[in-house]
Length: 99
Image (tube, rainbow, N blue to C red):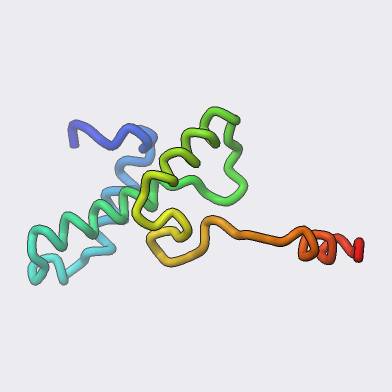
């Protein structure tokens, strides 16, 4: 491999490649080229994703929110999990036992 996505650390490229190949496995021969590309893109995206408890500086957070706003489904991740939650003031107060 001569190049890798910018967000993938050099030391993680081999792990990512093995993960992609394991994920596709024997079904690769039956997949169309477009389906295979989609599976690889999804795997690369997940690998490069921001993980729980990952420290972000303010600039990265602002960039991330701006990019999220430009997507077709800004309220959910590609797996369907919510990204944005809305709480009323009463719900927040109740959570902190203020009401």
